[in-house]
Length: 359
Image (cartoon, rainbow, N blue to C red; front, top):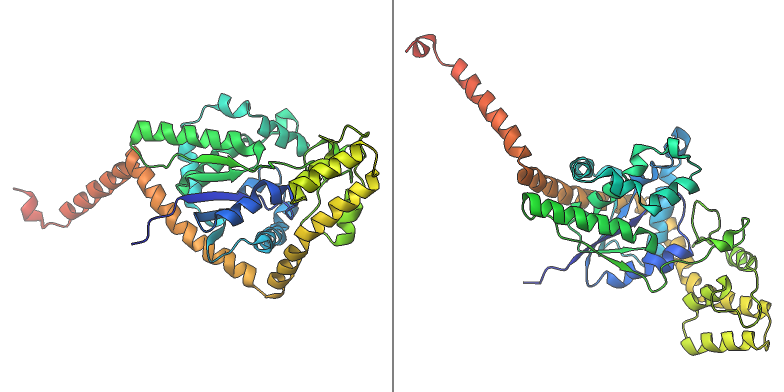
């Protein structure tokens, strides 16, 4: 009998296509872990509503969902080894999230820097932050705990969310009996990339969809080169933390080549344009096969939708099983079944003949 693989959960909000920051932050980890783990990958459309809930924004979700799944498939996520599913297609996770909210102090959520950053990027004032955004980490915990995931590959900005999920799982297990696996975050060796200067100050922030400073996985070679050339050049001798050299560190596969590139630039042997050329060349080695696979999947009509539906059916089964265990542990199922039993008993009594009730 084959040993059970540890379970993993990760995913993305469908607020647009995926970019190079996603690639080095979590996508490459997903691909590597497919053989050793049972992988659940969420397309988190409910999470996208926390900052994009207008009707016109929701109307764009089908295209965004397709884009995100195509990007996952293009980097090597295999639907035969990973369950790719739509968050809103798993109603049981809503119920789990509500129950977990009862165990989570508001002060714990309002102090999270990631929530504050999301509000700023969405242009929300403090008074306009919706309850759904404040509770974003609890819904994320419900996603993780629904699947009983033991490992959660995330970007550095989401590590605190996994810590919250751990704390909720431990608190629940202590209070009601063990139901949840206690998840552990894993962070990529390159947890984030700087953005590009397609917007003012773009290279001074991490690459992000909402900041408008991203290189998309589906960008053409010409567009990738154009965006890389927006990056400013550091003075010789100051290459270590410069945005372009952080790209070089992420995509040059040979450590010696990277060290030589830094040394040549710092002593003035090569100029900044030459460094840009080397980075663009290294990026293209990574992106060419990704573009080819994306094109193949996009050409297979309705294949993407089939993958999402199949994965969501699998996720629904897992979620309802977990919800049942949660309700049992908390005593909610006994409460309901007791009421049903009492009502059924009363109905049966009423069906008895009149003479049998007179005693």
